[in-house]
Image (tube, rainbow, N blue to C red; front, side, top):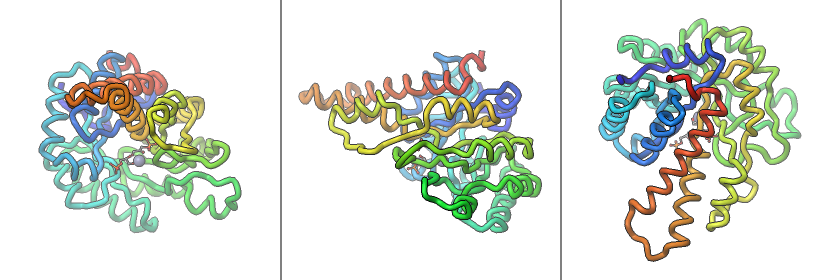
Length: 308
Ligand code: G3H
Ligand code: 13P
Ligand code: ZN
């Protein structure tokens, strides 16, 4: 089926009280793993591609692989630029078949973030492409941090309301204490659900949670058993994800858990079968491990069965 926009996928998710996973891909194997997980779970999925992924694989390869996957697939998929910062790359994505764009101006001052977001909305609207913006910075809440320090990087609900009204974006990524990567908390898990609740009361568009990987113990243990060194890795517990969805998160971004699953499986083959040199016998198990992880996420987010 043809690619959908995030606006379409997330409107349904918000109405249905579930979240759609945005899974990062950089190559054929990761893409196939995400799509086959979606088919097994009858779940929609957002194929997320970062500027780094475009640099790695090349825009034409990304677009044609995702289009082929969507044409062959029975589930709704969108092709989304994750953390777009460069206006030239954003323009190329809009012109070349992406159905959703994220403009990440979260590092800028409020007015500047708003100005660049408005510009991207103007570019994207002409082609019917959805836009996600980000307000607040992704950073774990340290135990010793003061209230004023915390206020400086978490999303301010009142500012978020003004931002959405003035930019007319389709979705907003907010900061409530999650962060990217495998090291999210030094101590206890600390997320500001009260803030999420207040933002959800003020804002009518779908909300997005970045930095949502769980760094599951089983995945971490397997990677470490076969030589990975990831001391202190810690993610967002499943219960916190359920809570976030129940409070109004409609899109959840996952990359780290895919990477960890992939390297665990690959390390296992390389360790147990040192004579193996067929890339398919090495990458295949990596692809299978990602498929299983993505299926578990779809069940956790409540999107399983929503593409039926
Ligand atoms: O949040 C960023 C994603 O994990 C993509 O990471 O920029 O290394 O491709 P990347
Ligand atoms: P994780 O690093 O927690 O997987 O977050 C990914 C993400 O937010 C991509 O935009
Ligand atoms: Zn992100």
